[in-house]
Length: 106
Image 1: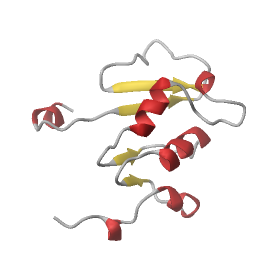
Image 2: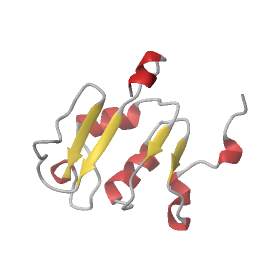
Image 3: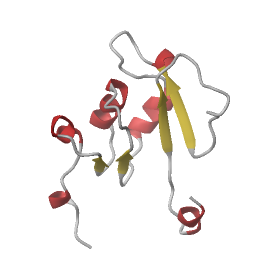
């Protein structure tokens, strides 16, 4: 993280806590926010200002580190305005991510 900050890259992380409350070690910071089950509706669609701000930001790259294929994260992936989305390849999740064939060549 220090190396990224030194290179003047902006990084924002959003974590999903699959419980109603955050635990003591899950404190939001400038670069890291969390949302919980309380921020989802009855069919697990996430909402609230933290989620909506993240979705509406035009990030260059969205890197998904979700290993459980949670519905709230899938919603964010589908709704995000990020230019490029990458994550763990699973056949049933490939619609949420961009192909490296579409990655711009430098």
